[in-house]
Amino acid sequence: MDDNIAVVGSGISGLSFSHYCTLQGFKVSVFEKSSNSGGCIHSYPIGEHRYAELGGHTLTHKYRSVIDIIKHYNKTGEIVQIPSLQFMLDDGRRLLPVASKLNFMELLVSVPKLFKLKKEDKSIRDYYSAGLGKKNYEQLMHHAFQAILCQDPDEFPAALLFRKRKADKSFPKKFTLRQGIVGLLGIIADNPSIDVQVNTPVDAIIRENEEYSLWSSGKKVFTASNLCLSTPSDVSSRLLKPIDPELSEALASLEVRKVETILVKAKSPVESLAKRGLIGLDQPYMSALSFKSGEEHYWVFHFKSNRCSRAEKVEVVARALQVAPAQVEVLKEIAYKLPGLKQSDLQKLEWIKDRLAKLNIFLASNYMEGLAIEDCCQWAFKEASRLNALKNQ
Image (tube, rainbow, N blue to C red; front, side, top):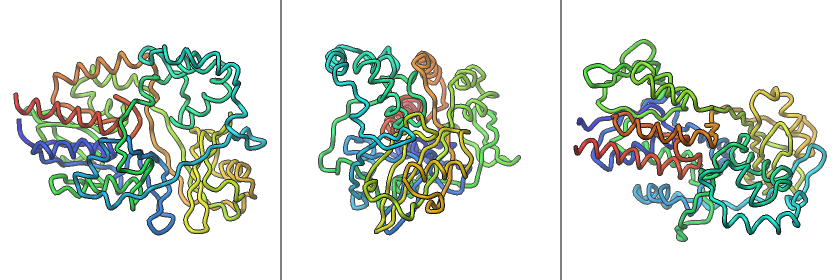
């Protein structure tokens, strides 16, 4: 097997896969449709060494794969510690403490069950309704998990959330990088064995003579012996349809959900909201995170897709932050896709893994083993290891 591979997509999954491939002697060519790497990670500058995160926003001392990558490139000096946010609930009329929606009697009765339950065969709703109480789930935890996942969490597999991880206590409990989390992607992309070609959307892939030809805007741009797709499942499905219709069909059956995110600067925020996060209770937005640079206050709001116009979003933000709409300055709006996995999809994912085992096609993704940045890196490592095993056969 030749030591070259084409990767479509330069989010954390695609670039961490590329990193692991270079450790095994591969040269990697990455093709990105946008003008910069990122995927579901988007860091926006709001001050010197301060970034607001519009996409994935959490790195912790339990993300050992991420930490190993940072150490490999000798970039521990880029680490910036960040504080934890305290969250409040927004019911559309007022802000409430999280504990105000807890039924403590139900919690006392239910929690002992949590230690006996197994996540593997349960959705988030089934697992936490049994372990924390049905009312506690409906009144609070449904909304809290929605804020974490940026989607309706009810049918999401419980096993793909809150995995046990061992902490590296030499790192801060929560941290980012000097260039924001997107700086992690830049660290990897600077690897001389990785060639990232931006503004190159891959429209089609053709398999010919045991190789994969990548086409962009009607032109063949690259040919490789090995192919990795680090794109949303619907995009991967479309690209693989002429190559492997069965795999394409399986990927097409996975739901994809859209998140709309807005970054604002509130000119006169309520001071008590500084260093806070908000969880929407049946609101158009799912969560909001605060960032501060100097004396300026910034907020990132994650909205449910196709619910509000831009003007309506500003109205929602102003009400939540208790300011006039004129005091809300919109700095950035983005939309991105997330996998909307269900408990019933786990069997499909096992079929996809079995199918991939026979192919020199690789999927570096956030839908195979979890949404967290660490989950993406761990799955990327497994796929790169599979590539190396095929090489050595």
